[in-house]
Image (cartoon, rainbow, N blue to C red; front, side, top):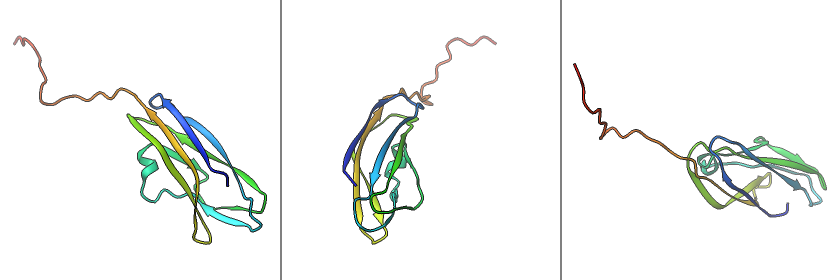
Length: 120
């Protein structure tokens, strides 16, 4: 599996951005792997991928890994490593992901609500 860098750039809030990465098994053995998010690092950054289940690739076989970035709030990250966990217990570094979203975040301040003149 060749190492790559994926950059989503600056995304607009709630607008999905999708990139597809080609994974190739260049070994002489069949490999079974998953792409986990055990600590939730990618979910915190609005990143998901498909397939999420276990995948089997025979020698010289390839498949597409679809990575989706759909931010709903301001977020920024650089060179987050994405790794696959293989059936023989080894973690294989696949790629680095970068991106961000500069959407406006508006919140109502409960401490200073002014109503002006009130007529009863």
